[in-house]
Image (cartoon, rainbow, N blue to C red; front, side, top):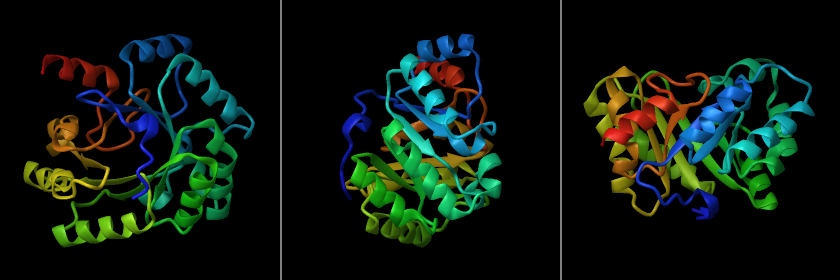
Length: 237
């Protein structure tokens, strides 16, 4: 592991990434600032289609409002991406990462992506943090499969490894959430998805996940709640 935590080493009990899909009004921006995400994930694949020069400007405008790290994700269609990536070849997706990496603090790239090594190398060359991620929207992999995913992800030497999977029961969610405790030297983000694991998803940082996710403008995963609801629930704990 590279260990370049930098601005992603959060000194709070329940760090949360607010997921942004490119929507929102000035009123929304003020509300998001008040909610204070610790990190913003930019799901560029879900943004409304725009000419490329508009994307850096949108990111810069939001950075003026939210003084936190920004993580760029252009999720592949195979792992839950939509909109923009439906018509993109991998080389075009790599070019988008290259064109926008300097506007953000880090990048999320799928372990399964043919361009994964290139994107990790790009982040290293530009001094940006990188998350290597894996997603399963159908099931929670077996323990052996989780260990295999983790080993493959570590081989790319990212700063963080993210594993997200559908949990059909609290027991499956707990099995996924056990990964950070079982691998204390690996900076892990683990995210159970689905209604059966909604509560445990909120508590992921308690189990050692470096952060959890809540949406700013629209949900991007099964069981994901809004940042407003997340702050209300955590405020009661």
